[in-house]
Length: 251
Image 1: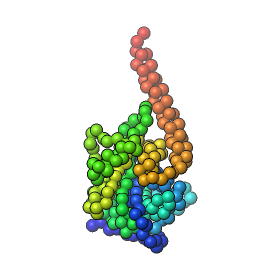
Image 2: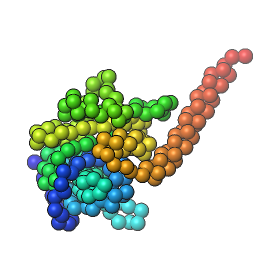
Image 3: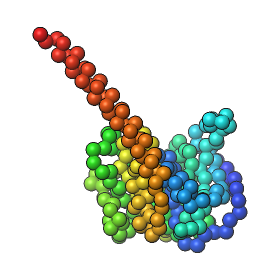
């Protein structure tokens, strides 16, 4: 049996015609970084913490010696547009937990005034990119997906699936007669990717009609790019060394 524990941090009236934005951890932490950036830029106010018996059985130790609990949190933003932001440091471990938590998060989003949903995530490409990274769209209707093409998104050729809360919250939105869209940015997949998060935010802000300063994310992206360049250089040097070792057999 899955048990949920909810801690209300602050009383808050429901927002009017808010957008529910899900940014829980996933590939490249794309959605999480994007959602946290919105909270930081627009002074999001935490109103609730959700704990679940299906979250990892652990706490995270922080640099100052304190601990961080495994949770999903809800923040509210009133300006530039009303937003209900879902962030956290984990997702459920089991399919049953994923369904239970996603369903409850959707219910809470509606209680706080959400009338539209966006889920944010990454699409792993498994290699260091050699060209501009794309953003893909999937929606609860073909019409909604088509509307997003003007913002520079593409459709996936391989169809594929969307795992976890990013996918399930589309379903629970539809079941509650709420239109929903998932924005997925291409990402290497095995490192935190603020550049992909910036790409997602660029599309999201255009679709919802607001501006967001991405300078902090762009700076983090440059740091990651420098790290990847070092990794790539090390790999190339290793490959060259192996080739030289092979040639040593020939006179």
